[in-house]
Amino acid sequence: MTPEFVSSPIYRETGYRGNHPLAIQRIGSVLTLCEQLGWLPHPGYLDSPAATREQLLQFHDAAYLDALIAADARGKAHPQERETYALGTLENPIFPGLYQRAATSVGGSILAAERAAQRRTVYHPSGGTHHALHNRASGFCFFNDPVFAVLTLLQQGKQRVLYVDLDAHHGDGVEAAFAGDERVFLISTHEANRWPFTGLVEDRAGGNARNLPVPRNLNDTEMDRIMAEAVLPLARRFAPDAVVITCGADPLLGDPLSSLELSNTCLWDAVMALVGLVPSAVVLGGGGYNPWTVARCWTGLWGRIAGLTIPDRLPPASVAYLQSLTSDLVDDEDDMLPWWHETLADPRNDGPVRPEIDTLIRTVLA
Picture 1 (tube, rainbow, N blue to C red):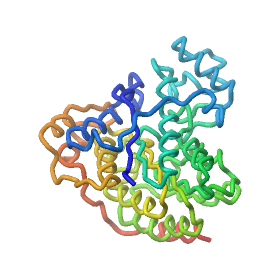
Picture 2 (cartoon, one colour):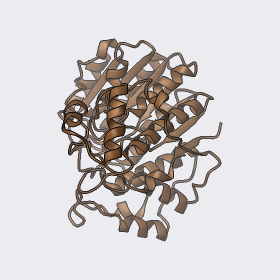
Picture 3 (cartoon, rainbow, N blue to C red):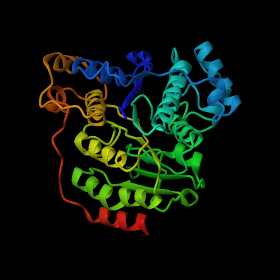
Picture 4 (cartoon, rainbow, N blue to C red):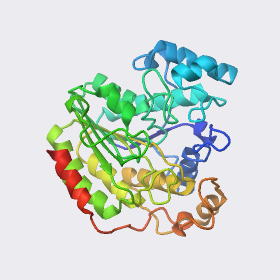
């Protein structure tokens, strides 16, 4: 069936303010680039609704929900709300429209899962807030929309849901939500010794999770090996009938909050290999703190999902748009790579496969 793209005009605004790592254009840039390439509007585009209170209470605690609504209404969190729910911290600031934005992310993942259950792939790059806990904000995440995508697929009659997290940071909130649930199998690749410092290779969350903490400077050849010899075999062993994928853009070369060095083409290949395993797939966004690599990665990922032709060079309007983006976390002169303005697809970053990669694969399969 026709692949679908779920998003909302709410993401044209950045939401976060000041020097927060998410105070950059992300989904807005994806929408703009897709429009400039003629990939949107698309017959499969769906506007994301906001999740209702009843829906949010399927996972999140009522007291936490009420605290978030109150803090959003007054524009700041009280000290007790900071202490109890991690609201209003430097990590999880209160900003105008916070509740609506977070609820829209959940609503989009619910809608994506409902549509995916009809045997199609649905792309929701505005999702991927995988750190939030049922009663606490965490890691820039207020609600955990991947949890709702998995829950919705189960409610839609799927018996075995695979969750794969390709973000540079461990998907700790999703793992905590489904630890020990035999209907769900969780696989996370993430940078070792990186916040939130969970997801050790020996951590199996009651038996239904496998974690692959990868070393710094991970290259494409190493990621390909991990996918071919660990992630895909584990996925096939579980025999899922649906998959939810969090495809953060922060494992890419040039992201300021990780030390991984993947190309976006490598990430696209990983996602498409997982999508090819099942009739029903939800593909989410996630982390990503370099506006140029995020915009190009998630735009190109839609191109791959929808079977569109990835151009060798971007049109002048897209080049100009990418040149207009800014980030306090990326040095324009020292860190900027030439293709960040010119193309969607990164050149491959191949390299040697270090011995610790093979050790990691053997350990996670044991």
